[in-house]
Length: 80
Image 1 (tube, one colour):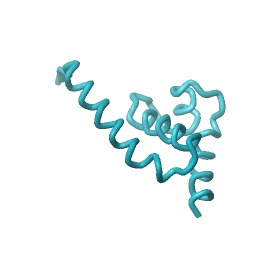
Image 2 (cartoon, one colour):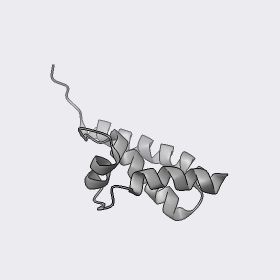
Image 3 (cartoon, one colour):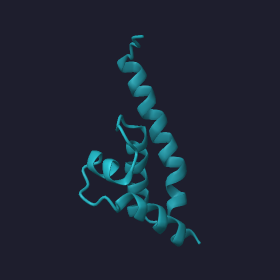
Image 4 (spheres, rainbow, N blue to C red):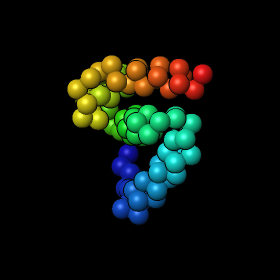
């Protein structure tokens, strides 16, 4: 089955993704954690074969495969 996605669809999805990140960003505390949260979300919705820390880090251009788990732990600890 073939699905056609228009440029208009892509723009709309991008706008919706931006709205989601604006809503949850403040929950993550520091600006650095907000930026990491945006990258993590982009990795989760990207076409990455497996969604583990190493593949997400590689897809997002990072070299540290511990970045994603550290993001989870740091956000939880900072929020209390």
